[in-house]
Image 1 (tube, rainbow, N blue to C red):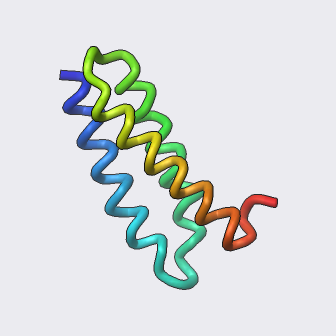
Image 2: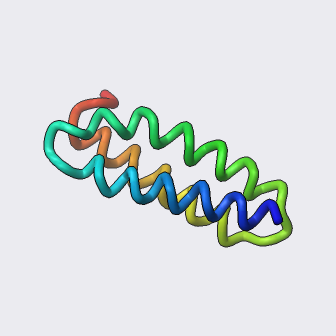
Image 3: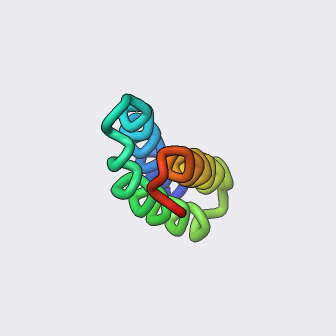
Length: 73
């Protein structure tokens, strides 16, 4: 059950992450990364790994996008 919750959080974060790839919306990654961290923590509590892996992917993509846009120095 926790894996499903983690997957849902990961999909929502991924959808918002796709929107954050638009110009001038990169600041949204500051909101997406904590959401994905919460999903990853929930995914770590479950026996499945799909939710955790999806959230880790969203975190990595968000951090890379922030670093390219100058949000993380």
